[in-house]
Image (cartoon, rainbow, N blue to C red; front, side):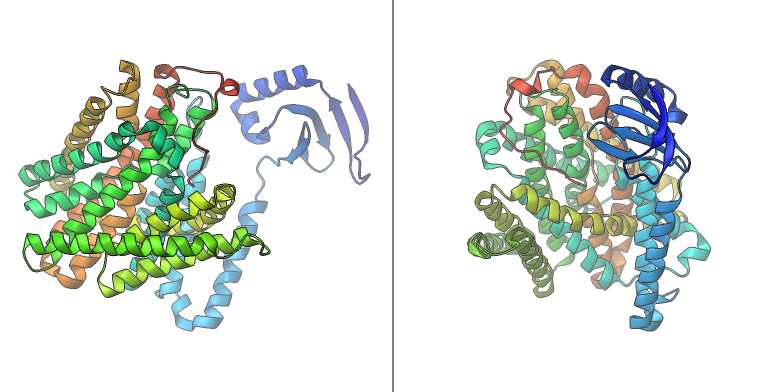
Length: 523
């Protein structure tokens, strides 16, 4: 029914077209088929009312309303003004540091460019496919900033700042990993989760060491260091894709989304531990035995300190305090960031991350009812550090430093290591009760790389610059490998999960199945 009148507030006149649920669904499907109209209106819920007002085009949904102005520039203008005001405030406080060539100016350019890159990538929509990870746009934005001469001349960030920011980003990743390890899911999945966490990571690390030694002429210790940089899977890509499949009812009965979500956190822990061990072997003097003993020392200190701080945060602040959820989130963040930065300052490189993981896991077991709320608060911290992290990684790769031969050997080594990982994952899942198609899906879904590579690879380059400049050649190759790994595996991994999931996993009615692990989200 079409009628003319005012809205409820009496402030706007317009034509109102009243539709029932079936008619609204038909209109939504038609607009979806017309991509230009769908982009213009961006319907989110089942359409109930279609209004054409005197000043705007609106879509009113059942129980909620979303006003969409097709090509509105309101948001970008508001964000630009906010950025300008932030820059003016920082300029008045820090002086020359906020001018072109200063540290604060460089951080603002990198973070805002990466933020825009991530947003632009969200506009790329492939029908029936999961969205591409925004981190890819952030990585490319940093790469563009570095390789445009006029801009790169005025964007300089000291290594101390970039190192501290990467360590803060790693801390947030580890907190997410600690909160993401659901004890009930780990108990339910038992051995298969451990096999998927340890096996593919270690086998890929060893394979990358062998291939890089014979193809890229890396020393063995550098080969294993590179292997553990590449060995980690990215929860930032895997978890959202698994949650989408879980929501649509694919693989739920077999527990595949739950398995991959739980194992992704443990996989990162294995990679980071191996990386810290070989980093100390590469850049420190002494025998291999001494390095292994020092790594065991760091592990013991991290576990003991993590258990101690875990007991503390379980009881402070208490649940009877006002806004205790917010206080608990900030307490975990502040303690973990302080421990990670402090451990690096005193030379216990492996202790801080392990302490963060243990403390977060213990806190999550005590705060089971509030874990999702605390994770949401911590996700806001990740939304700040994510553009900086991937923007900084992209800005470390210069086109003039890339040689065609070097890029070719890097890609060859990466592909061979990935093949070894895929075969190892398939073999390790062969005795877990999965079908042939499910094993293929798990093996291909276990390749995306992003967050851990973005944190660890710049650390190698920075350490080489500070303590061993003659090793910077190898560290640049590690940096290039990490950049290519993110660029190749993150989008392709997300697409493979989206394409193969509905075709290879069994579909179940989600209303009749109770999942053993709560959903959680990485941004």
